[in-house]
Length: 212
Image (spheres, rainbow, N blue to C red):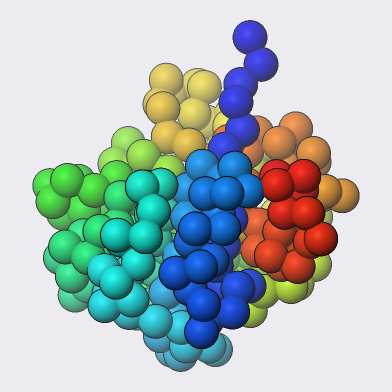
């Protein structure tokens, strides 16, 4: 049977003055998750929002919140984002020394732990934490800003992770984020991606539901 690909529209490309409306729009366009990018201005060169925004948005939609922490020392924020309503909580391998401990804490708190890598980090660096993750997010652009073009060679990491998952009998989802649109989505799916994050391709489309 063909696998089902999940779509996680990213509100990073929405009007931040209308985030509640954007979350409702994700549901209306047929998205599976609401993807929320949290940036601290240190790990990435941009600032977005914190746990209060996530908590305020939690009552707007019943869709799962896919919260991507692009922040230094994510271990200090796990409790607050889980309490705010994050369902999936993804940290960066590059942002903490004790990634396995943080993933275990996310799971202990009832969240689904995710681990992400930037384009410069090889897939092999994830080997020791794959057993602890429910989701692996491969950044297909350098994180920080929406509307960038996908870096094609990052999809080789998706292929490598799909092979490793099969060889080790693991069940984590593979997510891709960055430069995903109707021209690049097929390559990402063919490489092995299960979850597609798209921002500007959806929020700037004339018919977002059709794009989904």
